[in-house]
Image (cartoon, rainbow, N blue to C red; front, side, top):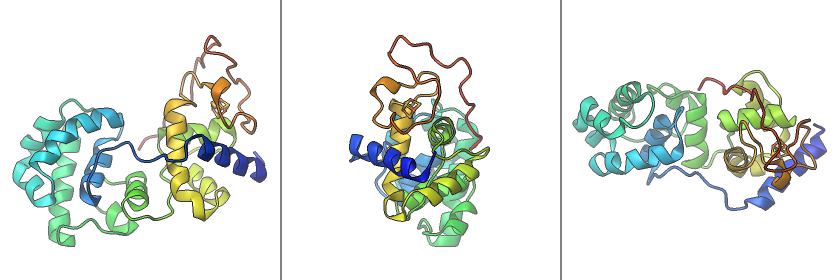
Amino acid sequence: MPLADARHFIEALALANPDADSELTFTDPYTLLVAVVLSAQATDASVNKASVGLFADAPDPAAMVALGEAGIAAHIRTIGLWRAKARNVLALSRTLIETHGGAVPDNREALEALPGVGRKTANVVLNVAFGHSTMAVDTHIFRIGNRTGLAPGATPRAVEDKLVARIPPTILRPAHHWLILHGRYVCKARAPECWRCAAREWCRYKDKRVSPGSPADADPLPPPAD
Ligand code: SF4
């Protein structure tokens, strides 16, 4: 996709959803960090259901450590990978206390050193909690980048680098939300709703669906590993 079309594509998403924001429930950088760790391969809605009780019992790292692995697990059993996530939430809470005075660090290196935190999670926390111009490539953004020609790449990092190069830094932060919500509600994995897509004029996808009755993709792009 030519750069000019990429800019039009992003502008169209911005106009369609100007107030796009994270759909995770959180109150501060710590609860955001935990919510993002819980959201790997799970929907935001399922995380929000589980995190209400978890954050009521453990709103900060010290309370989370006191709750313990079994206590955390009891709150998040409805979420995929709950055993590993309970271990990671406990371990990262301990590390925050021991290494960062109980605060969530405002830099990539320290975030990525926390248990269960990879580049995507660090990018979300830097973007949403600290206002950095980062682009977290989740399954939706990976799919959009490749399907539409906006930012093709074999890995999430390749897609991230292309998006960062193509989207002006001044709008990179909200663009992360425009793209995620577009993938979640319009440019869906199996059945993109192209007939109502604000960006279809600039999209390079060859098999655009013209109506709800159009055949869905038989083999949508597999999501990347987080
Ligand atoms: S036209 Fe279809 S494939 Fe292209 S961005 Fe819109 S929903 Fe996605």
